[in-house]
Image (cartoon, rainbow, N blue to C red):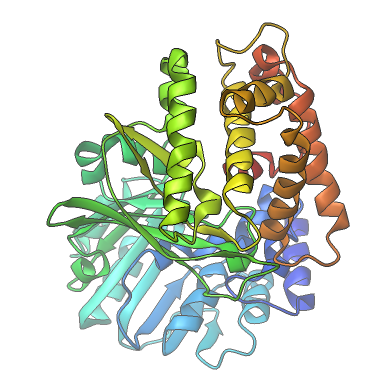
Length: 447
């Protein structure tokens, strides 16, 4: 990071009204990855995933711009943040202002700590020896790194690694934190939540390391990218007596915004593909699966299920002859069965088009595909326009956390969808990379 970037980030933090660990103001302020990552909602996710000791005394070595420091200050009794660079130290002070739990230092303070967080560049033998001597009897050390090479230094300092957690895409902004066992026990789920290689590690050391990551926990993953704070969620993958379960909760329980909210949900883990995956492999089943899914929506509505809005094909597993809904976190108070069905067909068409679905008509657009899929379950092709309008409104609220003053965002999201609908299905994948669409396009599709 350049000195100019560092000064700009410090200025942003000095001017921000909300500097909390889930500040929407900061999350959307960065212009590129260099600026966005330190301000991201997920900057503290690697620590959010851990079970931190109650009322701990914490030392953070290498506080950077205060993303981790702010979170630690919100959950810990005392935090000593060490940052030698004066510009970054100023940023940390701005980020943690108003918190009586945090003090920022330019050098180590001789105290006893329950938790020590160290960024890789500072994990030297001398520092780790010093840290070991100042750990409480049940204390733990978390080293955040991109390389396993530091494990040898830890061992030499008497701080052998007790747990190694993989962070995807990295520890700076982790979307998924997982132990290695999930890769062999639940490979399909592991691949889905990782979304690619793990470029970061959280190494847990010290006598209290085991308590930071319970043995029944396989992974924790987050939906914090391109979402307003009210819609951010975490999901824990845990072992149960019957196998494994995914348990989702909002990071900040909040009232609905224009009827839109997220809520807790829990799903048993099944080793089964989603409807989208099945249709990509077996397109001839499209009428059968669409009809079954539509009937499932009706059945769940009759049972009084609140989270119908998320009951779309990519959230349905095909487990033999049974369709199983999963990940039903979004609620939309204004949506009934017909709105959910129309939404599901629209989003399904988008995902099939994205993969260049071979069953789509040659030369046909995504709009044509959506209309044809709708006809298979009794919809008139004109449903697309109403479904699109509702999806844009929903995505705007999910991204902004408000329905007021969002015309620019709404216009950008609508333009993304208009471009998608107009594209030829078999050219969709090749043109997507060069289209220059907004950075939040993928997240809009995931909703």
